Image 1 (cartoon, rainbow, N blue to C red):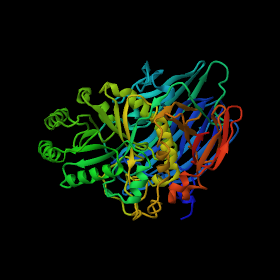
Image 2: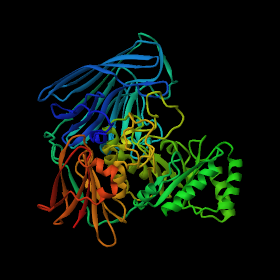
Image 3: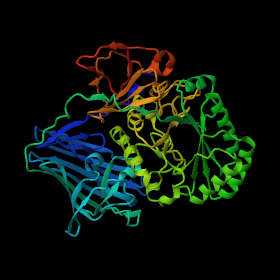
Image 4: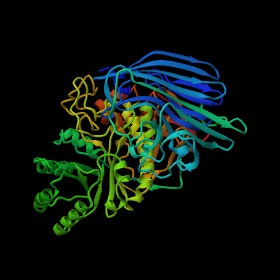
Length: 640
């Protein structure tokens, strides 16, 4: 298989280049393949994260745009973009025309003019505006409502369980001393959602309130006309960028040292029996634990337990046991008690979950504690949700006070492009910071995946299942894992992290039999995925040195050390283009191993040999090392 199919994010062809734009004092980026206007900035300060149009059907699925007739005119201080979007899926047929204008005065408008070409049910159609969390959370703002009334308020600091504001016409907030940003909404009634509830690093303002009944019928000829305008209000000196436009730089702290959190994988129930090669490669990761899930409503759960116990023994690590109860929880508790009394497994962590409830019911937690007490088994318990973080924020805090809260994370609930996935890795810190509202115990983040797991929808013919992502086997998957770990390993109050699965399409390596979807999920039978090496780079290190990036959406990484003083830096180019970066290393020389489009096949097919590879040795110049990285390259750098 050609090497380039493994480093592209989707395993197919490169995306169109991002178009850099300027509207007077504002800069922005336009992604022509998805019609996203992104990262509207005043100098280095992001005032709007994104504006885009979306058509969502009666199942909340976002229908592909089918972009046509794209016209992009870019001038020094202004721009004009037009396009047609033909959204057609099943009985849904909706056409809309988009126009985006940026003027020399700094006014940016995004217009959405659409019409239904069939009768269909929809949940939402129109423009969405994302405000960035780092620049906005906790910041004072002025809001104008649809009835013309105004009020001073604040963007929520902690994650807000429900829609904090509705009936929005205009929002104005301070950007930096002497500058404010005004965003106006026209053509419909808009409201705000705190998307941190769904792992998104933004506040979303959208039309069609969730308080209204949905889905609703769109009849042929029904029209949707909306417009969003962004206007900077600058009263002082011009705001110029200091960081944007320069090389990304990674800096490593030397004073604060944190323990590395417990990191593990989930056992793939599709491939529970591990081959000798798989065991050897998994043992090399030096994992903390293996999560094994038992779905107690199905008769095979006891066999799954025994397979999990065998895998844990083979890997020599601890067992985290996920227990999925149903509405028959009393009978399931009784059956579980008999099996546990007989097998008496050594369990480091019990994860209590419920298939029919958004959050583990408190009576179930109490009954399970009683069961463990009767059997004299260790009782470190986590409970929470297998859905979204919003399930915790919208539940009564008392539900989980006696346990560690448990929740999964993934980067693509609302949008599925690589830029959004990189933006969203930062959300987990917000989640952990808000977690004491419902439990003072350390949080369990499990599982961490590229897409939310769901077996509710059968696969569509000609497509991979909706909860799989072909980027699992790509270099982008490895770069995303670096960015995710960079945000997670330095967070306090985290009990453990569980990434991906052991083997298969959700795992860290491909099964010996290969994939069921060879044309849709590019992989090599029996090979490891690039993200395997990111986890392998953690092996043998016990402590974390805080690491920061000047441009975390372009470059991110983490720094490791151990008791003997050995130090390692793992970093990734988060862009689909090559870039030159700098790492502040002091006077140290380093040995570098690169995983990029040139070495990716070796890394997958001969991982043991690749891990012994040293591409080059570099000496620092002026306390920094400079590297040019190819798209989504991952670097492992050992201090000499």
